[in-house]
Image (cartoon, rainbow over all chains, first blue to last red; front, top):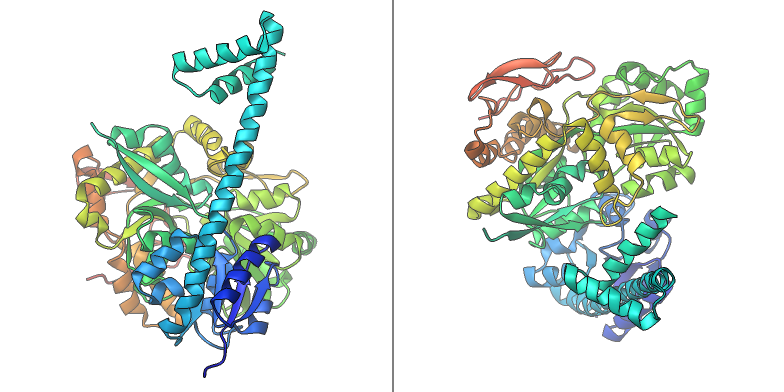
Length: 194
Length: 391
């Protein structure tokens, strides 16, 4: 029986970190550490001496890990980039999920695969959540702009809210643009005229 | 003509301008392509995206494809450079504590005198000097090592070199983690703007014609997609030519400042584009001719000797055979593909594909394949020459 793998998850957001840690725990018996502070990255990694480091591809501190992976210190063991040494399908899946993984040299594919499978699945979910959040934010922003545009039209032309919206929609159709874009143009123009 | 989309990756920096301008100003459309631009948060992420084919081409630090070819670093997939996207464009900054010591010693921040700046830095610096660079394989690192070594501080062994993503450089300076940095714009100016750094020297003062970023592709991709890759090379070449115009650079600063690209103020980007810098919080200014070059002096041409220089420098500090590394590296800069792609435009290109690096004390006439050609000044600050034997 080999000792359980030590995994470091680099993730500043506690909620996301918990999601990933939970998924890893379900996948097997691992010794998992979360590093949230970029500044402490090198020291934390030296301290835990992990077999696997998982990091979000969107995290700019990836290039810091890259340096750690190259240098012999502070890591005692050489760390290879996961995409470097695994079968192409798995590394492509990881990158598509937004996951970067560093794996200590010499670990067999069989031992690493469950970790990566679990992480890939969870990263997909995290990414989906992030996209949804961004979309929701954008929709809210757009609604605010449309409301402001409607208000401008109501005041300037003495029409009802319904008529103002209809006017925006008709203009958008005529100009082959989105309602939000037309509203945005109107708000910008009116700001300029103030 | 049907427009073919090509996914292209970049890191948010001023020198991504040729790719962004190619798409935004219609140079890509003129070639019947659309650049699907992917912003990458880090160089390693961009390298991996290119490795697995998530992007077909990428804005890349000139030393990354060379390091891959030498088996250094994490990349196992071979890359090649089909164009140089930019020459020069890096900036060295120091902490305010260090700047105080340089001021006390009477340093005048002459942006053209790399020798004086380096000697002042070495005299005032804590030992070891802690310096931030954006990636282990970057011209930033190579220029700093060349500069300080030539002035008697053997580098990198006498330095503590920290890899830091450009947008985090100012934070690291504020936190007191580094004494100096060498970084691409607008991130050095951003650190001045945040009042945590003083600009000491542009990289161009160390080597006046340093290949900074290249257009990289997976080895073999350009040959398997000769038509698409050539269209991309031409679109980027046209964008680079456009970017040499002063007004175009102002417009480019506006384009790059958009949130989806760099997302920093156009005024900060314009400093690098125009070479007019505010070097410290007090508002003191310096100008740099050709701070970043996209086209002039045949800047777009991937000289095999440029790659050889990078290969030789990397080999020197990694304990590899220098001549062998230079040979291997030279094959990575594909001047042949660059020539073939630009042939339909009738562009006058250098007759040779390699040269002695550092041998042009000023802009110089040279033999072009279609008549005389003007090459940009190419000089190392210490007068060093690099004459690779490329077979």
